[in-house]
Amino acid sequence: EDKVVQSPLSLVVHEGDTVTLNCSYEVTNFRSLLWYKQEKKAPTFLFMLTSSGIEKKSGRLSSILDKKELFSILNITATQTGDSAIYLCASRVRFGAGTRLTVKP
Amino acid sequence: KAGVTQTPRYLIKTRGQQVTLSCSPISGHRSVSWYQQTPGQGLQFLFEYFSETQRNKGNFPGRFSGRQFSNSRSEMNVSTLELGDSALYLCASRNRGLGDTQYFGPGTRLTVL
Image 1 (cartoon, rainbow over the protein chains, first blue to last red):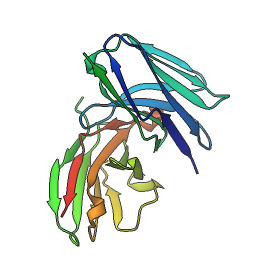
Image 2 (image 1 turned 30 degrees about the vertical axis):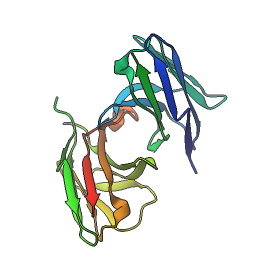
Image 3 (image 1 turned 135 degrees about the vertical axis):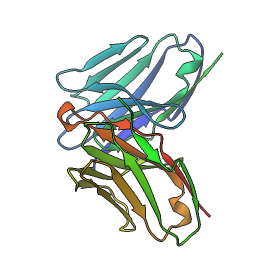
Image 4 (image 1 turned 180 degrees about the vertical axis):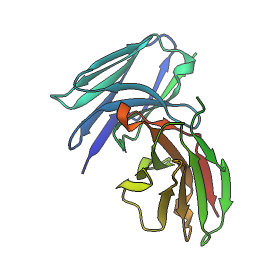
């Protein structure tokens, strides 16, 4: 059965800190690994990583995919209170449990 | 372009009743997936529809069913509601030609009393 596992499940940091969120996966016929951010209701898309695009960056957020070791990380530098959210990792329709990030002023 | 819309946004039902939730995808997106989100289980995949056909199904009992119409709008039905069905139900649409990126609606919060 396909599995996506995220760690840690919860993280509390202060503004300005850098955080690393982890995602490991075991899926058949792997195509892509996606990261989403969920603040109130609907998850919103952050990054999609594939074998042809294993590193993505957008502002203070960046992500890499290690297809050999079957994991991905999401980095957030210089965190802000607005980064507080649940970060979800997914491969197709299989989602991890999410990492709840709280950024304190 | 308008986003994914879901109706109703909130619903309160009692055990044994049935419920129908609706989802309108982003224009041009023909794939619609449904998810159940609870604090303990996270996001659990229910099913995916494309071109009015169910293409993929998660591990949920037969009380959970869905359908898709020719305009890509989708409905999800839950019959004989149980307390454990209380959850946020999310719908997501995607353009299959552009990969696995899904765009989520705001969800329907279902409470079963």
